[in-house]
Image 1: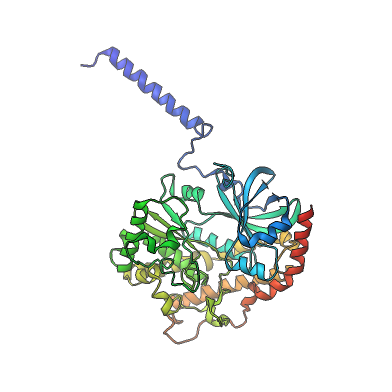
Image 2: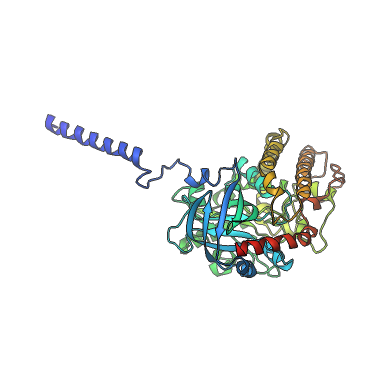
Length: 476
């Protein structure tokens, strides 16, 4: 039997625990505890996308940094974000073909990475470990990447946060860039919680190699057969991590019980957006890269990355690329690439062989069309961003295009979105071909010049002004 005195003690203990818990709830953030439901602070600071932010990069010799940028080696710098200073931040150029072509054309405007914990353990910008500054290479609209991430987030796909930033170097104007949350630790915690899974950025070493692992094809149980995945892990992996991922690829290769190995619903939403925006510099293209792979508890999903060549401007990566807007804007959604490519992309091909997944894929297109495009949401997103960035684009000293070309690119992007939406609606309703094997016409896009979105001719014209801006920043 419990005596009254014992009951009193139990009540007192319960009250003390309740007071302690209340204290943690009120003062937990001051003590470094982050509520599970709270957005990280960086998400509403730098990634407040309702305004253009400022980023100043202080380096000893900017001209030397530009000259050595293709080596992608980090150097220390001081960065001020909206007036708040951070020292010993890692800085390097980033990119693949964009980096190579920037060098080949003798240009100075590279996309950049800022890594806050590269030199300082635990260094961060209000919880963010790394961000990139995208140069809008071959994107005269400055809007392609911005728009696609907005679309992905709207469709419930975990996407990087982004916002526009006016970048200065040693106080001198450098240009308008898109600040993007790099998918690393902070991104994983924000999207998947503190007990998140593994994150990879599969990428090819050579276009001439088979790169089977980048295509997510099962090659066997030896982790050594997947160097382009495991060598590009964002976090340390152990034997169990590698076994889980390989097992998921094995299940994927069979086409059976896919729900045990693939976050199918999320992947289908990803592909609906990916196919809409005609991005072949991607998993669905010749290279098969430019995506992140997330694995948790043996289930994989694909996450978006790199859209400066979306909306038909990559032209399938062919030696003799397709330029015909009628062909590109009407590209069929059921065969988003040539058959020889699709057969090597099991994350798309094997899901689409399942009737339920195939029907859901079409249903997500229906949702994207009715809610985002036919409702006019896309135009509001584009026009609001254009108004916000216009004063900065007009005076951008390293722009790849003139201001007039920028305005033309925005109008072209709007028209491409309108026509693509109309074409896909017609495909879903049986009015236009929905596979490459079918014959027939689609929407008339002959009046669209996709080169207006960004082309190689713009690069040659930009050389003089970019080098002049680099020289000024180097002596400020």
